[in-house]
Length: 398
Image (cartoon, rainbow, N blue to C red):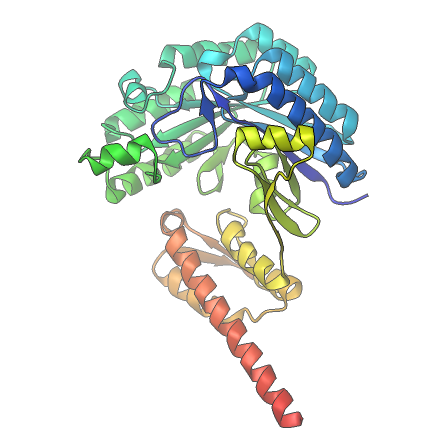
């Protein structure tokens, strides 16, 4: 029996596409849901054989909007997963939801199938801001959906929020956060708006629409970190905050480098020493799964050095941070140059050290892409230098 496995199932259907979204999701394709379900169920059965008896301790159904997929299909999917895979007694089962696509009856049925965590896309407490990004719901529907979650006796709720939205001010963001806190979720995910290439939002920006700039986003973020700490939410990753005992088990698998399988169109996996993904095309995925065509889009074996890079990239997103001897032991690389760079970051208030462990501060999290990039460049130069030195010695000995 291997390490506990995370299972991700991708539902690529939405009622409508939001202007900022670049995930693989489709609106207006409800007529393909039944065929997709057949393909996904077959994928579940085939993947369970590959997983052997590795226990699954987290199941995450994401999208898209899984609750738009329909209660009947979700129940059938969960039943098949639990029949085919070995799940732990305390398995965390999360379903993503939009406020306009859930009701208490549906949620009660899902809870009976083992769903014990809902991740809901609130995004904003302002109807004006929601309309600006073409979200298909109002804040009142958020309140009604949260009441339905509680009525269904689901006791682990995450709310997604976005700062940096069109027209957003410090005052409107603070109001959004306070509204979210009034709903008493166990978990909050607060993301800075990113303008992704090819999205309607990117087109709007190209036409001259102004968004809150980086300095404004930084101000919103740092206020959020402080406010949520006051409210009893511990920050455990750049964008994620939880009451004690309610960290997302599934997401921690990504950040801590644990194995997970992704099933469905566009899903990604890290399992068996390989990273691989499936085609980001609904028809090609259905055709492949039902008729034996190729569905793997990319696949690569991960080397120890690449794992060392992932260790830096992923662990430094969390308050867990990185540990000198963990790095040396697992990846057999010299930590001293990294420590010198981290000490520079510490002097600037971007990192701090606890024993042999290094973590970013909230200010460091804001600059994490740049800071981690510097560490990765340093790691690469050190590794290359070590390789050249070994070659030189081998030549001299030869």
